[in-house]
Length: 320
Image 1 (cartoon, rainbow, N blue to C red):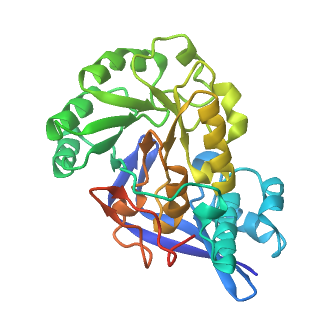
Image 2 (tube, rainbow, N blue to C red):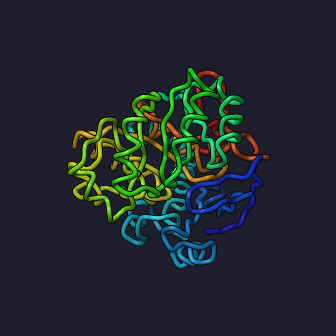
């Protein structure tokens, strides 16, 4: 049996990016029950990719209840629906066999990974205050993506003088804005810029100087995306809602590393259930950005543990 629930998790604070703001995370929880065992997965339908809660739920429920994880890869395209069902099937396999997912996937034993903490787009003074509040964190991610981002950059660095900083423009710049900002990103010690130009209109990244690493997010979904990134990007951001699940995410990581890209593992704003399988992909990644649960006012039962060592692997009670 396949079951889909719509769950809402209120956020601790308003979360803003260049495309808009939200006060809650609306997710779909997919449960697959067979022979008395139940596996679960979570996805976040994303309007940027034409997804809605209703459309993704319909995709999931259109499939036969006994579908295998192997058949699923061709039955649905990469996206939120396949992600939730793929992760639920991995979880189900672990519960049925007693063998954790990391072992079934042939991975080494899991360990914590330092994760970025995201500061949402806001007025410079508010971003400086947020940076100061979270300056104890070793890695901060700044949401930018407007033509007037320089004061925000300066403000965050004042608030967190010692933190490692990465920035995410969410497709909000053009080539001229990025070229103007790049020297200042270097001056302020920014380690990485994520998706500075819109996907599909990022050809200039192959022609202009890239003085710091540039990461493909919206331009990279699954392995089929890799040929189009050549000479434009140095890193890829793997998100399970884009790859369509853990199965493709692990394959994309392997293919990206073989092609010479560094790897970042990111997330949509969701609960610990959504982050749990991504922790497997994040093992040894250059950048881990799985802070979704830290942005919530309330989380799942048996949530992921976060501490000075980073985000810990999930307990069997949560997933996998």
